[in-house]
Image (tube, rainbow, N blue to C red; front, side, top):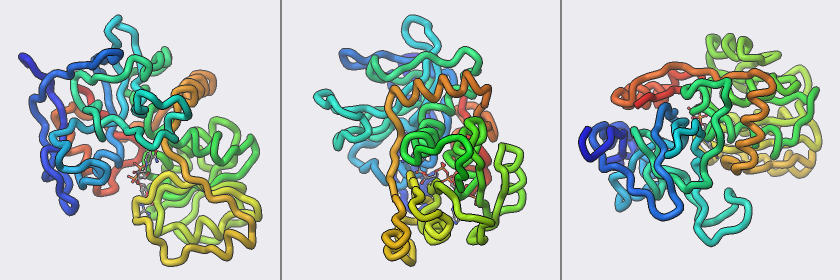
Length: 326
Ligand SMILES: NC(=O)c1ccc[n+]([C@@H]2O[C@H](COP(=O)([O-])OP(=O)(O)OC[C@H]3O[C@@H](n4cnc5c(N)ncnc54)[C@H](OP(=O)(O)O)[C@@H]3O)[C@@H](O)[C@H]2O)c1
């Protein structure tokens, strides 16, 4: 392609039918500002974030067109195999990047990774783990990093702890199941479908439950990405003093009951969690290398079929990650 790259980008916002605003076609080659580099993308993955963007959540129409995609694995300008970290801090921010009020994720302010090439700050890459192919490695920087931080930073679980994961089929949820199982936690999972409960067991869950089902005992931590639909069950499932970590609300952010009494009476901790920092991404890479755990890939599609992958994600037909290769 002369003078451009193949990219999947938001060309319009449609809150009801987000895929209508998706265009896959030629896009201008990235022009990295000073201290940024261009990464040749070998694999990128889809996240629910891409659907939110097409709905206009975090992406106002005046920023269009915007290349979608938060994470990627590829080659830096020297040919090194790298992972791209999606959190972009403002230039003068010196603290924890995910606490910068002006931070953004790739595809919110700067073009994202669903393209043959992406520009990122030079400091936003880490070496790809040698034992993983590009497709597996591309799953790590967003979904897997989010799950890793929820479990090992914000829930602070230790081996032997029992952790309940809501919505087992989701990208973050399935990653959390795999990470928890690989690091010695007793992982319990909730899913709406028999098939997904069966697959959660294959991924390493020790027990699976239907939505709202009473558990055999209360758990040390719950990981939430489903939101309103599972909120009450999550809080009812925690032992006194237990921790609920929430990083998403796919089913909505207004639960019927806020469960305030339960939270104070049982002294529960409710912790919000977003992405992770570069050091946490390095720790995740090390954990993956040491344990041999590998991201669960639902399907690999060429970038030109991005719409098909996003439709599957939107329809809840995905178990694990959808990978796109340019
Ligand atoms: N804060 C961050 O840094 C961060 C990072 C990544 C993702 N997220 C957010 O986390 C959320 C999860 O994203 P994801 O890509 O992992 O997965 P997802 O595709 O949004 O799905 C999550 C799972 O939730 C369950 N679910 C969905 N709708 C439901 C409903 N109405 N009732 C009950 N269960 C329902 C489904 O599980 P079952 O079918 O198995 O029941 C589904 O697989 C999204 O909202 C995303 O934006 C946040």
